[in-house]
Image 1 (spheres, rainbow, N blue to C red):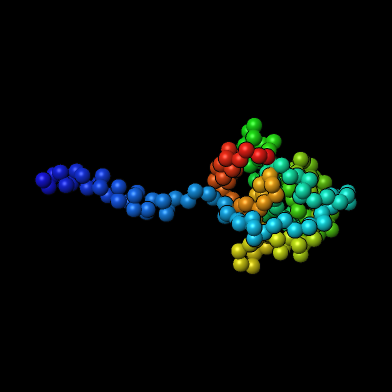
Image 2: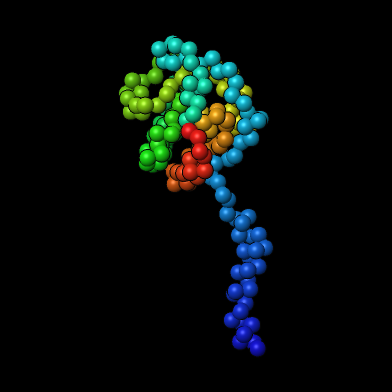
Length: 184
């Protein structure tokens, strides 16, 4: 009887661990922080393109948007985010056409031409920094420029990724939303 108890104990422990909810608490389904879009509707950004033409994020409705907001002076953290956005889009393979990359520039300073060429295809819009600061959710006192955000094809803010995102985990989140979504 003791031999049976010793042999069955790992099986019993695994059932208790799994069905007791311990494993589900440890494993998180998504990497990015989910955002309730009702709390953060897209404001009137009064955005302009780099050549001064009026535009808005509405122009990209129907596409998933990976969004970064910050000043035109692109430091190392900014460069890493722009690089990650480009690579994450490319990692989606045939689904990459469903994703647009958008950089909301929060000042009127010039952007380096080399930087624009390096991230060719990215949409760059100038916006009011006060509007962006009120709109994009952050944790504590950190600025919105520390995160990459994801908007769905209907224009709803959905996910916020951490400052230095793990590409494999972000890729997994993007794969899931693109697979589950029939739009965009």
